[in-house]
Image (tube, rainbow, N blue to C red):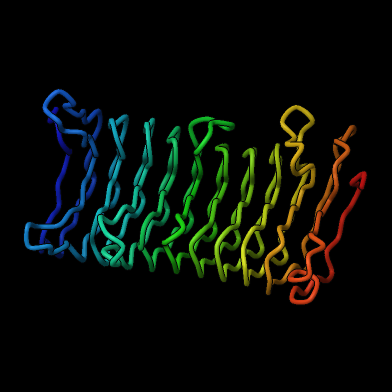
Length: 298
């Protein structure tokens, strides 16, 4: 019933295991200027040192006022087999206090996120992050600024693989650079895969029932291949800016190959399967091959 955080790990703390702990309803105290309210908080000491080699496993987090876990700095942190329920913000928020790489080598694997605004949010210069084998059910399917996994414009070297994601404005929203998004199953989001930034690989994902756009590409040097987009876009939520299951913006040096757009609803919307730009950068530098559409009107 504290007014800051359930558990606070800071400074040079290392070789720590937090196991089978129930953390819920951690409040904040706005009147005294305390805006925390995290289930577990990782932070630096006054000397600028960060914790490392920490395992959080089998813990249950519910209805904490800010994030269920906030990491503002740390290395070699594993979050394994935990449950996150009814989070007002993010299940796990990787939010380094600076752009200097205060967060590195974070593994988030085999967790369950239920009714959280975001599953995992990765900001600033967080890097070397692996998000694997999680199940994420986000708070509201069409709520603005929500995502199963969201990567900010200065994060880099992130792997998102083998997750099942339901709901949210974005299933997976990638920015920054050099992320790999592979083998995920994304259901009933407004925007299934949203790709911005540089050097990303997006391959082997299934997007089913995305209501606004299945796959949006607005990045340079990206490889988008062998993804399946199934029964995407509804007339009720179709965005007139896109009206295409796959929509690609004009940036240089990309690959769009082996993707499949499938439709088997009795009355599919009148949308395109794939929309490509006509700019010179795209036409001269992209490799587009072996993409397929089945039962799509255009």
